[in-house]
Image 1 (tube, helix red, strand yellow):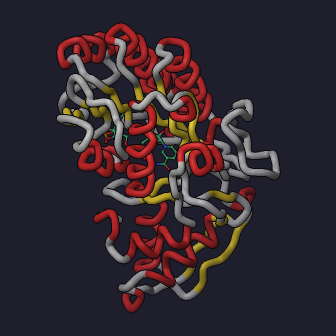
Image 2 (spheres, rainbow, N blue to C red):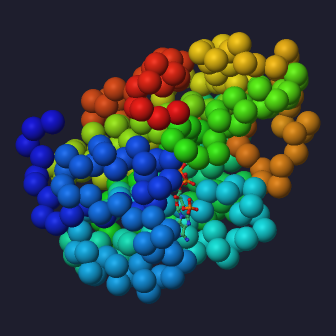
Length: 301
Ligand SMILES: NC(=O)c1ccc[n+]([C@@H]2O[C@H](COP(=O)([O-])OP(=O)(O)OC[C@H]3O[C@@H](n4cnc5c(N)ncnc54)[C@H](OP(=O)(O)O)[C@@H]3O)[C@@H](O)[C@H]2O)c1
């Protein structure tokens, strides 16, 4: 894109070792010098260190890809989850507002209860079912309250990179077991980290150019929807190492047959119309994105 304002100051990337952070770092480099920080550089639970860090680096843009993402684990660790998912974004928003620079933050479809039949638009009111979802919703509010120059990207079902994602788990289990049981009454738009990173950087271009649609909330996922069961079947079909599979059947189970500590939304599909129509960001269908990921695009799985 042309006409993007040059950044004054580096791009501070938090959560650089996470699956999204890893995909973002190389793509952010065209905006400015990236300062990629991991847990080894700063423990985000130490809020004073986070504040001091932003003051020391004096970034031109902060991108927060860090989060407490253990959805089930969060049910028993609300205080720690809240610290990372609400308090850290609040501090980042305060400090970026003080510097008068934009803050890009990530949130999730888990802010919704998944009960409505249609995909969720940006203006749907949050109604989380889990501690993780509630802390992410509160993080959104904290960012919006403290820095008007913000972009909150809501994502869903992100896979790729080195994390313990659904895709990686399915591939491991397919080599170990003859039967897999996968939930088929929860729907998502599975999104490779590289697609999310690419679309986010496109949105940041618009944010820096002060495009009104690139401020506030923005849903960025692939298009279309699949149950986790349908996603698992497609992953296994497209796996070039299919010959190594032991699995003979992938059984569809409902949520009640697969109890987890955290409740998850049945409809996890986000409406991406705002990004596509107002910002011209092209988002691939979930199957196309999966095929391209297997073909090596994005250089991460
Ligand atoms: N994954 C999904 O399906 C999904 C879906 C929707 C939205 N999102 C959102 O997308 C964003 C990126 O998620 P992701 O999938 O990339 O998650 P991830 O792979 O778990 O990465 C999160 C990163 O945050 C770091 N972090 C957490 N607590 C920290 C602390 N106290 N100090 C320093 N670093 C800390 C983690 O470090 P360690 O590795 O050292 O723990 C990790 O590198 C998050 O905002 C998440 O809520 C993700």
